[in-house]
Amino acid sequence: MTPIDPETIHDVEGVPLHSVHRHDVVVVGAGLAAMRAAVEAAKDYDVAVVSKVFPTRSHSGAAQGGIAASLANEEEDHWEWHMFDTVKGSDYLGDQDGIEILVREAPVVVREFEHMGAPFSRTPDGRIAQRLFGGHTKNFGKGGPILRACYAADRTGHALLHTLYENCVKEGVRFYPEFYVLGLIVRDDVCSGVVAWDVVNGGVHVFHAKAVMFGTGGHARIFRIASISLSSTGDGPAMALRAGIPLEDMEFLQFHPTGLYIHGILVSEAARGEGGYLVNDAGERFMKKYAPDKMELAPRDVVSRAMQREIDEGRGIGGKDFIHLDLRHLGKDKIMTQLPQIHELAWKFMHVDCVTNPIPIQPTAHYSMGGIPTDNDCQVLADGKAKKVAGFYAAGECACVSVHGANRLGTNSLLEASLFGRRAGKSIVRFLRTEPALPDLPADAAKEAIEEIDGILSATGSEKTGAIRAEMQQQMTANCAVYRNGCNLEQLRAEVASLRERYGRIRIDDKGKTFNMDLIDALELGRMLDVTEIMVASALNRTESRGGHSRTDFPKRDDANWLKHTLAHRKNGAVAFDYKPVVITRFQPQERKY
Ligand SMILES: Cc1cc2nc3c(=O)[nH]c(=O)nc-3n(C[C@H](O)[C@H](O)[C@H](O)COP(=O)(O)OP(=O)(O)OC[C@H]3O[C@@H](n4cnc5c(N)ncnc54)[C@H](O)[C@@H]3O)c2cc1C
Image (cartoon, rainbow, N blue to C red; front, side, top):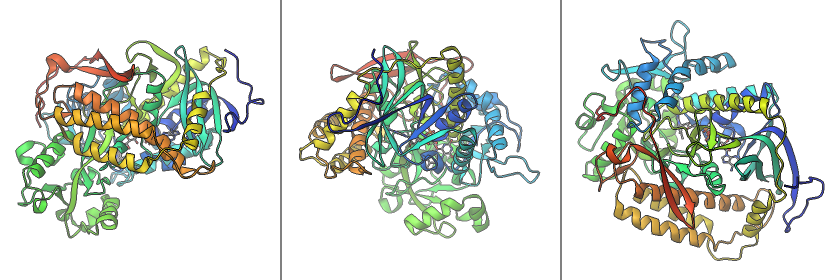
């Protein structure tokens, strides 16, 4: 391979290649996973963070309810209890070796946040306060709900994200905000960097690095009703897929029960953790029929299915497609101190004062359990199994370790992002100690990216990206949401193929280079369509119901055939599948009841 010479390459095909940046480590994204990795690696190495939005606008900042750790500040707790809950919550699809790491290291990660300056809410005697969350229980599920979620009012993600940003600045991390990463540079299972578009000034930039880490977040924006930020478009998984890496368990997407009606904006599970009720049109707390023990604090897949069933059977409020979340009995004081953001969101978006009125809610696409396959040290697996990509790491919502299996428990994601982000940072440091040289940069490293940008800017088709995106999101919410079936998924697959074909005929109006959001929208849509295709094919392929994937035509969990992870990739224009076994160590699969 001939190394690229930064001085000689400009204006390729009319799109200027502005520069080649060199760093020991390039971290893509600036959420909890990315910045936790950056803080860790920056103690020893030169680290750059490249993010399409300004770091503190990453979706992690919207997280409300809390971060799980068995600190036992409020009542007796043990990592083994947390492990049991997480394994059962995952519908036994989570890998138990990874889950053990998650729950054992959780207290360390939370205390480190405290020492970095995170402003947690406190108990009267000054320790980190903890609250209830769905699926977290005492004594291996035999006791009631447990106070395990550490929180900063209902703005936990905001507090942790800002803490990490400040610590990155302190450690001298170099930030490249508003750079849209277009593709990975991987040849022969060696990663040597990424290619990015400078959103502010225009131009393609190459980031040449010894190690690349992805913390690019989730992809629930492929749905119309979604709680996640507009920037959560699955760019990371799509880039991995385009580099030939399969995606793991993409059929599993979590629908959070309490999205604000029509908007999908999240009302944190903390609302139920603090004692909120779910009621149907008859004013009945219907969860007693579906999860008599845990009621509103059953895991999210269970609650979303119950709500959807009430709606489908005509017991939504006024016969419509929403349910009520009732907080009135909590009283104004509790609402305003423990759930101030929820009060504000309900007021601003629905004109509902939740002190005096129930909030209209419906299930909303929330969290991506599937993603880029990694080992427990966050190194990306080239074949999803054992073969590794040298110098390429991923953590957080874009990755699949897999600790959440088929369904994630609330507050386990901020934990996973921070904890595996930290592990990724440590793995990268270990790798760099043994591999001091920059890998060669292929001469055509930026070719594909330049062709893509050039292609979109000069396209003369008739299709609009906004229309294709709206159609895709509408179709996904209609046919691939809480309940799915083979017939709808087949139709959806054909629909997605036709949307991909239409995408090949787009035209954008803004042909400029600076702040061209028309261009960014088109790039994101291409990646969302890639992820959508894989998700729909994976959902069609898995003929059972487990966690976040519920098939009305295959309503039972089928451990004999499906206690395994899906690995999906594109082969000869179609989606092809491979599988790998689930790692089971301490807890054998059982029927899941709450
Ligand atoms: C409303 C809401 C509330 C939540 N509440 C909780 C909670 O209370 N507890 C909990 O545990 N979990 C919660 N979650 C889930 C949790 O917040 C997320 O799963 C987690 O924060 C994801 O972190 P991340 O670091 O993986 O990615 P993110 O925080 O999503 O960051 C992704 C980053 O990648 C960057 N990026 C993406 N693509 C590109 C690209 N092409 N080029 C450059 N940069 C790119 C973005 O700019 C961004 O910086 C909540 C989620 C939502 C949506």
